[in-house]
Length: 170
Image (tube, rainbow, N blue to C red):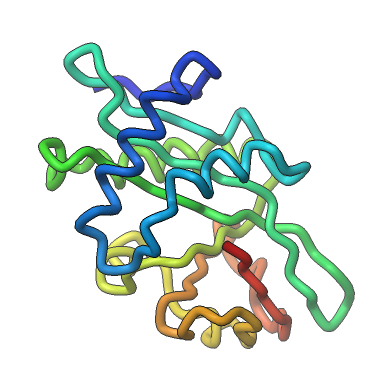
């Protein structure tokens, strides 16, 4: 398996991978593939942080990180939103999702991004160090239930005493 930055030539294949992956997801509205397309159109899109996993000459996984504002007690701060992480059904349980996140987070830190948030299954993402945002002193201002809004520091201590509000719009 190879992990690389996604290109516009990959977009149709990514669309199908994301659509397939979320058919069986615990947390899904069925429109994640369209959310990816919409994210690419926003100013918050970071092309260098959209990665794909390639195996057997096809895309089998995808991750995308984009900018995410947090309203903190000391003003607005920019972090990252991981949305979505997808792995083709036949390639699950092989560490591809973890490898995609690891590669994306390494690039993010090199680009001076310090924390990441997501909407997802708390049992899955806890394995990778994500925890509920309330543990960072943050409030969820989204319509999404609190237990599914998770965060992780990419640089230790960056979210300590943040006391902010996070609103994820899908």
